Image 1 (tube, helix red, strand yellow):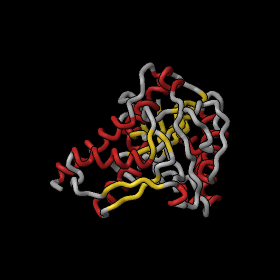
Image 2: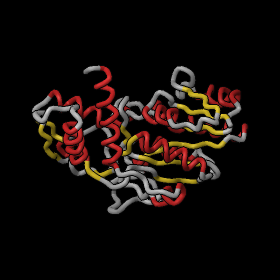
Image 3: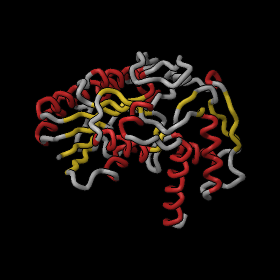
Image 4: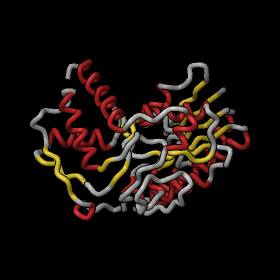
Length: 291
């Protein structure tokens, strides 16, 4: 089996490569080797590789910037996926598309099932929904949320930096979701692949929280493992109205992961377990480098 992973230098791409089955041939493609903005090149390049499976972990993820670059966001998140699907049909490959909680509008009041009607409220979410609509029924869509890893730009790393620089940090408290460690997500993607799962499945860290409570947990866990001083920034809650952004965010995006749990035969790790593991990895790296 030949497996192509796009977005290989991203948070999930790195985690997928690190946990890939040793018995398979894995081809890692990053922006330098497969630029998703150049959509006319995607299908020919993938067809030439003759993959058995394509895992698309690449995406345009700059949520606010997408509001001023809708064409680019749509080209990378939707049109590029259409080209991948075309290559998959021609080669007989299975396509696994990674999507997002942002395809929903945040009006739900209980965990959102995979068959719930999408209704994105920003350009990023709309473009990711466009990508979902390009995927065939026999393929797999994995929606996830609030992904973080030791490397890359994400909420955890941003909080760690700001907490070390400021006395007070104000974080939105009226948006809820489920933080997801990229390593746990990658393991679930491989498990769903082995299980032959098709259609749409949700995969996030178990449980839910707010950005404010997530920031508090980051602070607490980082102090425990020595990444932050106990004298680091105090975290204070604010409302979304107090932190306006170009793109609207869903107020509630906790996903119902029951179908993915049933498919892989085990519960998903809790979001706080993922946070602890991720910060432990960072602390080990800091200790190794002597910083």
